[in-house]
Image (cartoon, rainbow, N blue to C red; front, side):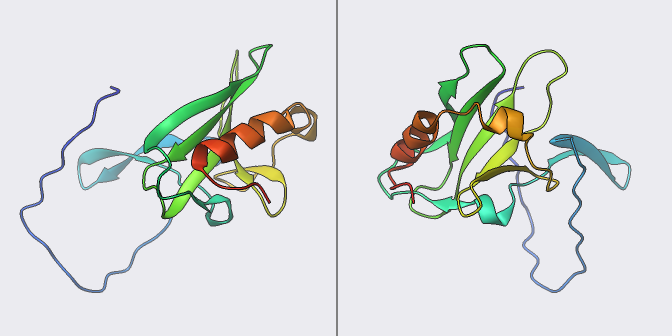
Length: 144
């Protein structure tokens, strides 16, 4: 847990295949069976929440830029491919019974989960604008 895993490929196959996208509401990671093999998968960020960071922004898988003073949530940035579409700002609820992950949709100004659920307005109002500003600054882009 917490380490990189190398996946060796011994055969490249190019062609058309039928594929399905699966989203499980309220669960970020879960197992599916590939034949008899359990495979850990995760929901992805909604397309509308993906940003293009500056090419010189740091490469990070998840970096906390704000921690709620009462420990209810934190704001993280993800930027695995600086300069390319895919950077994200997300809110991670914390504490007893907390679950889910909400991505910031800059066009709507809302926090949305992988399953399309909106973060409760009561919690969303508690996110300081300075936290969003810091996240955009970390990604090397200007907040709209």
